[in-house]
Length: 277
Image (tube, rainbow, N blue to C red; front, top):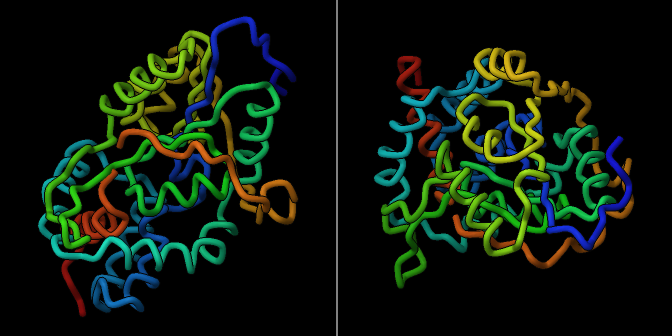
């Protein structure tokens, strides 16, 4: 258990959480693939490929090179997609799709960090259009995610404004620490992936959650705590307070639209398996 109350005469602190496979059991963007299909954003072939990509992601995730290829490719795929439509699709299906896959253990940690007087910040490579509503659902104070440029017509231009991945996550955390007065030496961070080592190294209390092989090796070598989250549960079933409107301060600097991130993962899946439909 975390200490119950933080000494507020000391500098502020925060707990930084990766999202996919750390707080929720699946990929946040891939989870919305059927909804995007029903909304006309992706076709049937893409839905089938995202199902395969979800399997690959859960089995081991994507490494650095694959993530970089996604970043370069997704901007072309999402060009012209209407941002408001993406937001509406996410809002309409958020509780049905995301609430059931939130880890009970992660929700408990979020509650404990808030009780201890710490801010909770979700830091995700997924798109802001997905991550920000999930952050609100969880009661997070801030969100750091990938962003794409939106044109005057309200559609993605195809240009990436900020890619929240690897070292850039750590940079965003340091910027937040400077602007919010966080003492990073007393802050916490949680992630499942070795690609988040820079974020974990940026704080005084790093934790590996359901770690991939590379992160597990690092955690063991550095004597970092290793946590096993495996109990998805609906928030309303375990914590009634999570059903009330979440904290209002949900914005930080950074995220590829949800649709764009999904498109990148669709492309990744197609690289791993010949199209059969």
